Length: 218
Image (cartoon, rainbow, N blue to C red):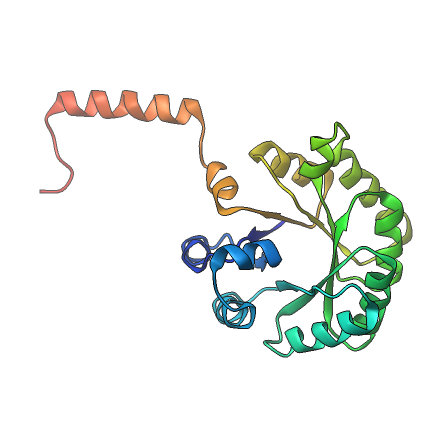
């Protein structure tokens, strides 16, 4: 499974990238707004830092303008994945951009039927939103499983990019289901290292070591 980090925070990306756990980055208009920087400037900096796909989202609501915006974003760097919404106009843009050789991330997916359309339109990535489904008492992880089954049934090469990740459990369950990629905020990825028994065991080791009065260095 590949890990994308869902942020436009350069320092957070650098920290995770140094550890080798960042395979790509996803951004959206809300994350760009939080950065307080130009979308072109911050996206270029991320692309220079990360070798894998960097999703940059269009904001137009019609296919013609989405395609124009997508081409403009794709010119930033060769690892740009143009992010388009899962609307009829977005699917048109996906087809045109993918036919033109660009990576396309179709976002805001909430049903298997939508995911099937995106695959047929040539999407590189489909982004089902787990957390937002959970918020309305639907099963976000079941959506990942349904898409996995459909894509495997017919050999679609579109990558399942599980998004709206809210917890470590979301990540581990997506890994068991077979999602190709997850994208999560830096804090959720870092939380994967945490376990109460690890903390408890380390505290015991530290206490026992202190009793010896020894030092490893100096």
